Length: 515
Picture (tube, rainbow, N blue to C red):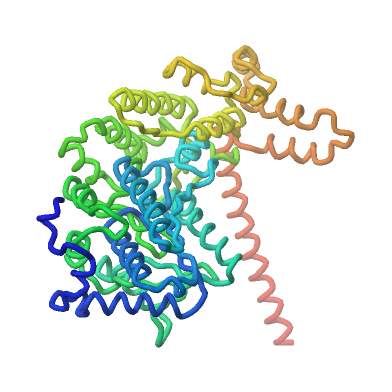
């Protein structure tokens, strides 16, 4: 955006325009409100920044408000925190990184007590560590395991670290009541009477302040496009990003009441909670064709959530070793609840195949000149460790280094002893013995691993209990189903006996009363 196309030549000029109110009040009044709240106490501020229009607006408002204060009034620090799930839409990641650098450089130049930080999920809690490593099924509306691990926890940990250090903090959010009726209800519920603040829904010692709570969608864009960003440059790239994708941003999620990404919002490119990723589709239609393989890979993951595909790609046992059945919600002809199988993690062969495809896509994108890492190298180490010690299908052949070498023609700095004491020939031998003696190879693998884990201990306390736990797992499906039916039959028998005893007790009680 050139200078000639801007409505105002500076932020000061925009502040003097009282004829263009925001949510019914002059912009200058809102800045005074922010300044008064900042000077009111010594609680540090934490600004939640998602990279989208709303969070960019509050970041700009706070930055501008601090610029207008005297140096001696800048009495506390303002932390800008952005959560990177490591599977964010790449163009959004670039936008966020650009702003974070600009904030840190601009704040230093202007003498503001403000720093911007990115937080990430723990390596063993990332999307790929869980899906490819542990075999977690792709997230759905009924099993959305990703939001808390990847978004809520990293930001909450950052905020609680500041609470531990300072006692209390104020979290500045770009939430708007217009976003959804449920969000409006949450905002109203936690509001403190007579105060601009609200209690945080889940973090003790944290309060929230939402300066654009009553702004409309159009007012947000009017503010962003009217003049320059206070840290330099304009918001034209952000506007073009929205225009090219027909999307809204994924809000910074700090609790379970914040709407999770879905519909047409920017968020994780791997998100399978929605049927289609309209944001990435829009970017591709507007020229970002290099993202097409990512879109197709996401669709492949979404297809695995279809009920008809579960049996072929997921283990029949849960990670705890047991076969599980749940009510289907249907009643059969006998008037009893029908049960259906609850499947376990993805089979290892599919996880290995998907990792190979993911690395191939990453390599292709990088060869096209895009410096993008679809899966981090620490995640590869974590996934390898998960495969080697998988509770159902331990990867004794240690396939991950071979997969990486096949794609990139080189090795990472793999930890040598991660491979354990077993090799592919050991696994092949156990497969042969499985056919000969009709004993599951995985069971023998886990028994040997257990024995080795106890080797050399002077006291092998708990060994028999662990052996018993392993042997009780559902290693043979037919036996497991029969066992479930036996249990149900026994429970029905117990109920019959209990009812008979209850009737007998009631008869005896009546006889005693009569006598």
